[in-house]
Length: 184
Image (tube, rainbow, N blue to C red):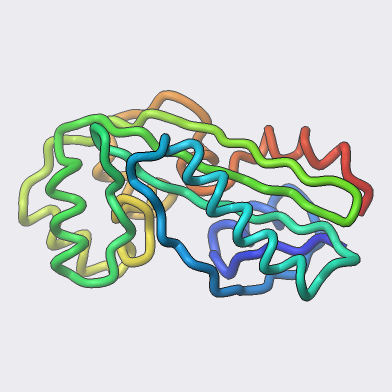
């Protein structure tokens, strides 16, 4: 059986949309990182932590775990949990481009692979009123960079280069290709 080591609604929807049958499980893992590491290494490390934690309880299954981060210049723009954090994240991104990295780990008793994909997102030059209107939707909370490109956050995005699903939080094309090597 496939286990998604995440309770992310968007990741669950993506896997359902491509016809995979799976069970979603949540797990608490440390998200402490060394911000001096490369972002691609960080997202793969965090996805591996999540996969390892789920594997402890589901060692006969195939685990899929992912982590997504937004990077502006040389620093992460973390997922906000308060209105102030959401405002700060969105204000930083306004009118600029940033990179989105998603790391994925697939693991079962026979194999393990970690990979990442990245994309560039160009944000519109939006104002404080637009930021607060978006925050009122509740959508920024818990999202890397404080926005959801697949939701109302698309109104803040000018364009992007790369795989849309990497930005959403699960690079489906690469995931499907890598899953072919696993018996589940």
